[in-house]
Image 1 (cartoon, helix red, strand yellow):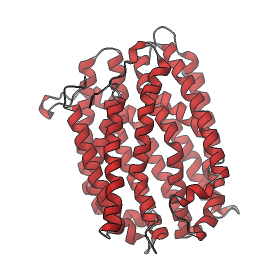
Image 2 (cartoon, rainbow, N blue to C red):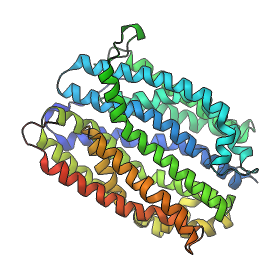
Image 3 (tube, rainbow, N blue to C red):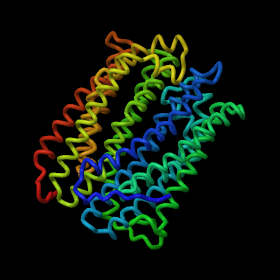
Image 4 (cartoon, rainbow, N blue to C red):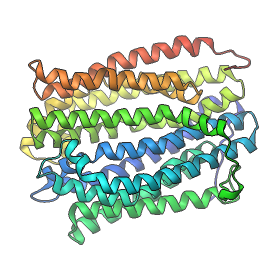
Length: 455
């Protein structure tokens, strides 16, 4: 395969964003299938589909925590690599990538060992019942076996994109997604392994993606390459920089996990296992609808970082305008589809009549302020890409920890019942998204110098 590299220094901001975002859109769609295909097939298992779906949904907070540690190194190191490449500090950029890689490996090994040991008590804490634990526990334990490969594939792929190889980054996801789509029905239905089969298919897919990433980053094509451990110089400041910048994405994922835990816990108290299955479906639909917005953000991130490092403030401003406009237009269209065709999205996973009765009104409430997520993503992408870690962390905590979690526990007890859990999301989108975007405009956009940016 020929690896095409996007030249971030050519000054064509819109073209560069499109060239990076288009492969990222495909990659995100494939990654979506990678993650959601399990739920689609599990929801179709005859007789147990709805409850099994709820069981797997209880695993989301734990999987989100694994992703959080992955982002700590991937999202922490890759923007720094782009900034140093923009300054033409290639040696430092490569050192940062290798430091991130070996910290990721060590963390993955620890998470695997700890995760296998504590899966069962964690799942009960997160809202599992004696019924749903039968499906959640085997899925989670098998998933933990593939933690190392998952973290390599997802954690090192940003370093491929950061070098302009967006199409290659897309292939990382493509390989895993296609393998998972093919293997899932074989293991779930063909070999009659049910939920355990879905987890095994996922692990095999993660292994294939990890092999592809490692092969590329040790090949002759990339400017930055992985090195043997003995050749890597671990500098304290650079380790701190990676962890510091990655902490924003880490916190974002941890807060996602916290929100999922809060929702499942409250729904198990004021609702039932059926409500947890409903939340699993809604979260899955949200993941589907978020894909283009995430692709725009991920595709523009290395361009923002590179131009910021090169001192091209005008280019950074133009990129911010583009991703804001594209995100707002898309989220408005997506919201209209949710209002008009909620049954279509729910039927992707399960068409149970009782589930539909709960899920349709819950979906209308949950997605009411979806457009404000575009403002949140834009602000967070800019803060992260320009190494504004304090702001990125603050607004992650504001929307999820300060607004969503308290409302999730308060609203059900103020007369709204289980529906109060779903109401917390649109309120947080409106308040958190607005404040994040306005702050980005005032503190970053309006202060960008056309000539040379200084921290």
